Image 1 (cartoon, each protein chain N blue to C red):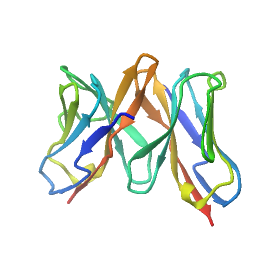
Image 2: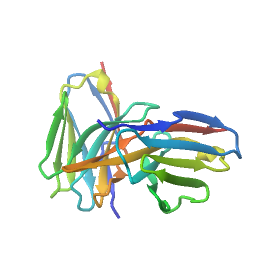
Image 3: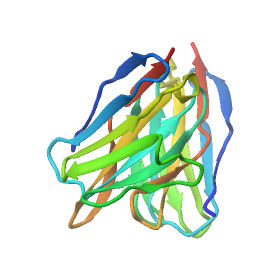
Image 4: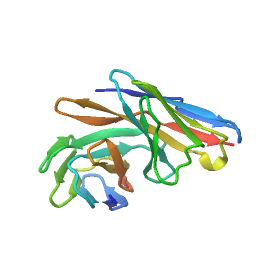
Length: 117
Length: 111
């Protein structure tokens, strides 16, 4: 099946620094990708929709200046957590839909575990 | 607002038993996903249900979708320890691949 690659799989950073997470669709093009966040023992929450060539759409309560999203090509979206703080520590997962003639399916990256110390 | 309710949230069962996880959602949708997540890992796709009456089976797991009742079920037959994980259902809002997630069901299967 289609593959979505997310990198890095885990990262530890100091408070105040920025971290970039990449999400790539490896064998298909995705004009839209989605970023989710999962706190420990909780479900996933949609953070934002990444749109190729245009601005991302953020869900209510998600700070767009803190979570910068760039979708510069049809196969790559990046999420940058700026001025990270310990409360930003979480599991971040991206997804990309692969759409064909008979419909489509959302495929997920491996996830990135961010720990801010 | 689309809400997805999953129950039970926690299930502890013995090997060999059968059980069902339920996923109710609040507005019309005809695209529902089931995922498995092991601790500290990402999501493993189990089933994609795309139409009313859809039924899919893989090994000891079977999923079904009733769009009229806004209900999906994940049935576990003769559970084995390896099926211990957290299971999520997710509903596609507006058929645009933007998913709304259930709270998850943590399943523990005791040998």
